[in-house]
Amino acid sequence: MKKTLTLLAVILTAMTFCGSCSSTRHTGAGSDNAADGKNAAATRVDAVACDSLTVISFNIRNGKAKDGDNDWNHRCPATKAMLETLRPDIFGVQEAYDYQVTYITENCPDYASFGVGRDDGVSQGEHMSIFYNKQVMEMIQGGTYWLSETPDVPSYGWDAVCRRTATWALLRDLRNGREFFFVNTHLDHKGWEARRRGLALIVEKIAAMNPDNKPMILTGDFNVTPDNDCLAELNTMMSSAREKATVSDTRVSYQGFGKSEGSIIDYIYYSGFSTCTLFRVVTETYADIPYISDHYPVEAIIRW
Image 1 (cartoon, rainbow, N blue to C red):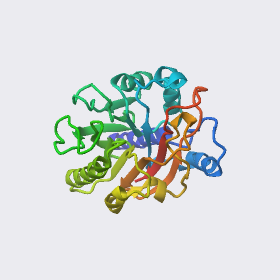
Image 2: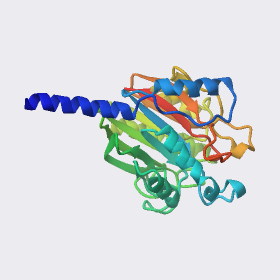
Image 3: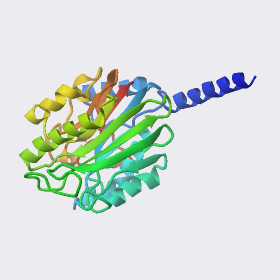
Image 4: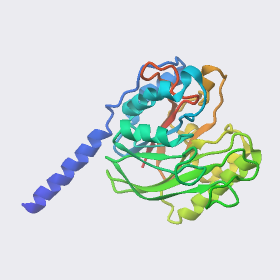
């Protein structure tokens, strides 16, 4: 009898987790009528499943930038609404100051965050934070390193204008017990050598931290387009969700609050998973705010 009750409890728990990641998630009203955008948004509902991870990479635009009507204080409700709507399992943000990280954790309490300020290794400067849904994920360990010749301490690398970091975490999916690594970064916007060597350092660190070849996800604003040579080595180790997804999206991710023709510089890479069923640029309008950031978030649904 006890064995029967235990088995029933396991089944009910699995059903609960499946319900939390079923295809009841819907996107907001679309703000872009591009055909590939419509197809990607429509496919999203069907793609979300219990054997998958919903991942987002989001350059949130630093809260100290003087953007007028697009200042963080004006547009922050859009971030909350986007996360409540899409409910990613895990996501990485770039450019977030500590109060932007706090805004997310206070207004979206299902999420925990991990990351440090790039200027002092504690709270000062932009954070490349990782957020995960505590209902379905637990963090096992994590850390941050600087993209420089001295990666263990706050530092500038090569010709970089800013200190640049990568945040990493080892997590467990509570729905199935599987473990995976997640890395989030932001490459320099000016230094060519810093981008090239910074990404090479990330590739080196990924290989070193993962001798058992656990599944791996890398998110970030790389500040390079997909044809850039500095992606060559990464492309031999991991797959670009944009390039490999069953249903994908050709739209730009950076749009400068609508003032730029835009470019593709935001990425989700993966390895050790069976497939990526969907990649899309999230162009919906949230909380009636025209632009969530000067970048659109990008989203991928990756299957175990």
